[in-house]
Image 1 (cartoon, rainbow, N blue to C red):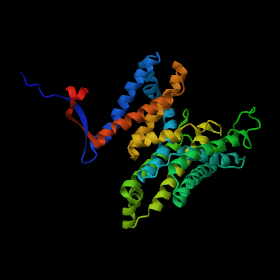
Image 2 (tube, rainbow, N blue to C red; image 1 turned 135 degrees about the horizontal axis):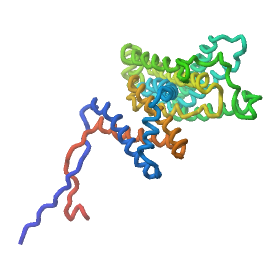
Image 3 (cartoon, helix red, strand yellow; image 1 turned 90 degrees about the vertical axis):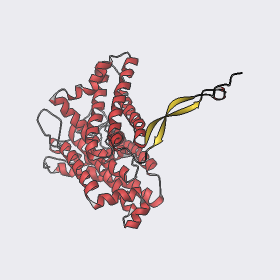
Image 4 (cartoon, rainbow, N blue to C red; image 1 turned 180 degrees about the vertical axis):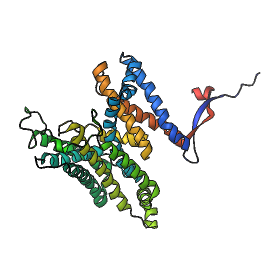
Length: 372
């Protein structure tokens, strides 16, 4: 009588917790996520009956193939970068501002209100007033969230998100009502802003304006603030470890207010640059989703100012590529959101490797007991 062999075990991969986060994977994860997004995007084009090479060309080649295309890329990247920089301050402080889109809209409304007051006697200095009005509008809208969180411990995620819809409805009321252009053939929009209110452009034949320089300067200022100042260190500690912050003499309340006001101000500035720049008036289409897309920009850029510069350019390529795919390939407008979602989910999946490593281990028994 033969002795039965012990049941075997299937070799499998298993996740093992790292002793500390991997610095290599913190850089490799966004790159791998981009590769996965490209692969999944190609499969999506095939499923839709489209040429994947031409589809990827719309997203990754057309936006950079000429000087004019690069200019349009920078136009899209400017608001994304500005909003993402503000959100990075929030997220590093453990304050979850999801309502940057509403702060962007309020900044646009306030800036548009100042622009509408321009007359023949206005000088170019009104542009500064327009931008400051946008900053003030965004800060005031974010300040509502900060107040409710500070005084009543309200959830800043829900409050900031709900305020987005309030801001959009306020915009709609204005362009359909008191600010509607009487000579605009009944279209829901304000009159086109006077030329004196337009943000100065950097070069002829391109819509790129000084907003790009402001965004790059803001990235440099944020790097200095976060990594070279005591206030930046206190800001991050105050949000991430309130008890430790109090022990060190830092204020977690101050961290909350600074994070939300900086984030709101940056989003409001982006809104002001948008309406006083490439758009030139208030319309129902001002809410373009930049506030939500900037969340992805911030995390793909690892909440680092330099990383967010590159991720803002990548996200603007998705915006322009989606528009081109819609007009040239007959794809739906939602293709832009699909690519943004693919990048986000791929990044979340790849970020697992920052905290865990793959190990070759033994799985379940392959014998009669495992089958049962």
